[in-house]
Amino acid sequence: MIRKSFFVSLCIIWFSSDTFVYTDEVMSVTEGESVTLNTDIKLSGQIEEIVWTHKINNLDNIIAEIKGKNINIYPNVVYGDRLQMDNHTGSLTIRNITTEHSGLYKLLIRNDRALSQKTFTVTVYAHLPFPVISRNCSLSSSSSSERSSVSRLSVLCSVLNVSAVSLSWYKGNSVLSNISVSNLSISLSLPLEVEYQDNNTYSCVVNNPITNRTTHLNTSQTCQERSEPLQNSHLVGITVSVILVLVVSSAVLIYFHQRKCKSAN
Image 1: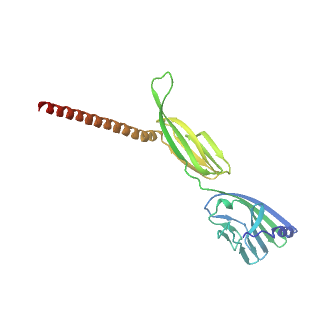
Image 2: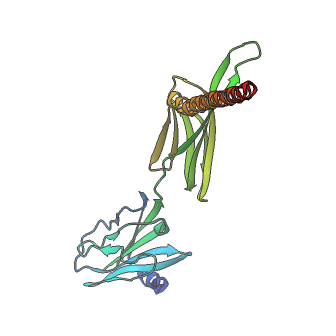
């Protein structure tokens, strides 16, 4: 289990020290990476104690500490065997980090009569999926005054089970439309309609504060791919019709031939 504290009493003792130094650091990482929270010190005989805590459910839980020459890493269901402490610096490494390891970490160092604290606000982002573009080519009249028709392409860009991301359609480097979601894990979709064989470059991008994934749209290839099955279906229909005509014609000829033979007899 996570060790809950004697942390409050620890602070009461340490705040009676002569010196207090406070620093803060913000870190953003991707799930699966290894992250090191650095103490920026070298351990010596003057350092009496180092304590690492992680705030879970509004409680500062002690996850690792050094007392004198003893290093203690407290096993728990949240971290498993992911935690590792550097015995020369006291820095804490979290291997194969996951989103549940996001949050506030505190480092407390007691050195003779001085106390220093360093906090790390760690945000862990899940791996982003590539956007999926579904397509539908259709013919529609360009205007009431024109007799010709313009082939248009309706597309839908989607990502599943994402949080803290934005989904955007780009035309070149310009944003056409976008939609965002905060920490709630949901699926996002964003429609777009363009003309068939439009020479502009269109792309759908999903991004969070540290990375992005892009899927490009090829309007020409998309419509050609969809037109081939249509052409093939027309050919199949024509072939079936011809065969039916031949079969019916043959049956009629055979019928009249048999009647003629019976009449001659």
